[in-house]
Length: 154
Length: 133
Figure (cartoon, each protein chain N blue to C red):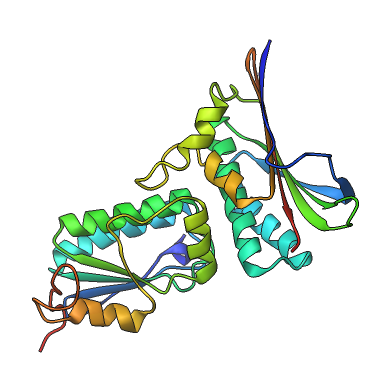
């Protein structure tokens, strides 16, 4: 079994969740809209600054779309999290699917930067929009992908 | 679903449309097709796309907008996208995206100035003089 784990952008001591996750299935196109709205609501609840809300919702849109298009659907969960030791609050998005996995995740993360408008998987872009990003994917055998993205309240 | 239709207005040889707060794939694709048809049917020379209500632009939306503009250009029309929200602009840059071939303006009024500049003036690419008189 070959597994790729992409190094997170921050040391990823898993932050403590607060309350229960909101789980949104991603199986039809309409779910992309539902997912964006749910992330927007969570971001507003935590009073993220408008630009940070926009970044998080946009990242969610990219990741949900990837899940839908490339993995045949999956699930997004939204959790409020608490960071130690400073007690900062944040939103953690987890995208899980049971698709074919991403064969070259490092390359996929670079693709998002190609000029010419939105080539590639959008993964690289999504990663830049959040504070913490972690990707785990398995292609042999194809066992799906888990992406975790966190945005802290500034 | 008629409530997701994006109305396209005409003033002189200019077409105007205001995009909603979020774009869904079907409505945007339909809008792009209708815009192309109207451009030809009404011999329009310019398009003013107001995106001041648009709150989220992901890479897919950016691509759709770029394609709509490219199609319009092929049909001989100039497209100006007006009123991008600052948070959207910041996010696009962070995403590493651009809107290649798309002229932008701060607001609809500025876009109108660009589109109605007399030929030979007004920045790169002459204005097409899209309003009568």
